[in-house]
Length: 184
Image 1 (cartoon, rainbow, N blue to C red):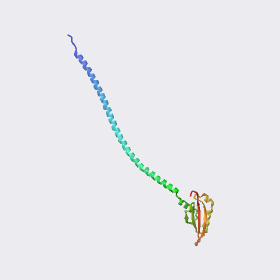
Image 2: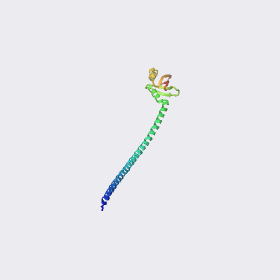
Image 3: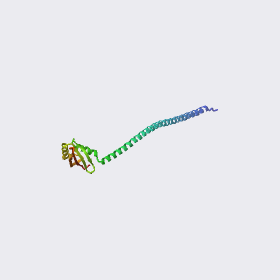
Image 4: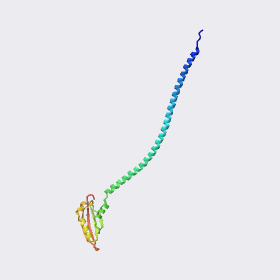
């Protein structure tokens, strides 16, 4: 009779199956660990990104409100600038009475006063000047006859005396006209 050792074949078959099971379970465990790790990475990254997104949204809201606040200021600034520009344009086109009156006041000698002024005639200013005495009248005439002064003057190109009269109190009333330069 022949003896067959069946245990050894079974043992070899069993050992082969063990290795297959070990390799299969190991690969399954590795893949499972990889997918769990990848899933955790995605979840953690999503949480971090959501937190960053919330921070950015908060910052954008504060920046947006600051921009709206600055937009209000900018709108007010632009409106104010437009108003000031319009005032400047209007004032540029207006006759500059104060500037002319200041220049006339500089022409008058100390004892002479401006008694009347008329801006009605274009290109001319009509004046009435009262001088307290003859010396003030002479000083006024000297100023009016000084041709160099009229060349340097920004506002006037000359003066024309119309009438000089002495009143009861001894004061001299002079009616004269000042010719405005081309820009007047």
